[in-house]
Image (cartoon, rainbow, N blue to C red):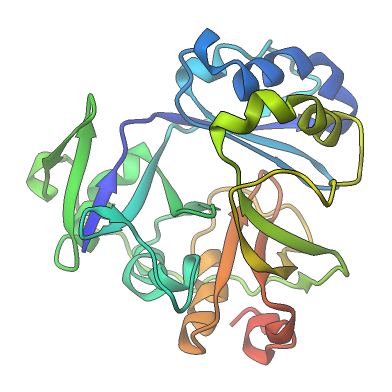
Length: 285
């Protein structure tokens, strides 16, 4: 399999709930007016605590600075994804982070590399700090063919292409409590060509309404509803490693599909309702 280091330098930010009004215009521009911005990577996740916005440096320039309502994690993050036969990883069996738990997530946790996960309908993005790329490459190069994206082209790389590639000492991660709310979620993929026709509906959903319309036009969905497992009793921070691994490995052992979404404060796994009472998962082992 191939591991791609994508050509994006990302910032992880948090917008407070009561500060959203100050960022509505730039967020609408980044989401719906892509031809008016140079941003090429953008993710927005709403949780009860805040809005987590992950975006590249060009997109970050669009956000007005505000020490009161905007928090910014200090590192530059680089997104990785796993490709098979030249395409984003896909399977008719387990989907999401389950597919890469043992090959990517666990080895990085053993080398004390903190990851920030963004599962999507099409693929899983594994964000690592730019300064940890040498450890990532030296850890995974025996398992993967590793390519770095440079101006749209992929170049083969190895640990010799990075400095400071010495591996770190592994540590034992903290076991965090989990919370399983009653909400159910639908995982879907929107066709970008439909955005102009449904922009008003999405703006209402994102900024004004708490209800997602049942008849919204979309191209494909997972065909089932998912339950969320929230990891962490207190904000997790960004320095601890192994959090994703201790959730995803038991799911992988049971061949249980899971989408994993990290946010500024907590981590979240989406699993089938039939799999929620998983003993090992709920203990966080």
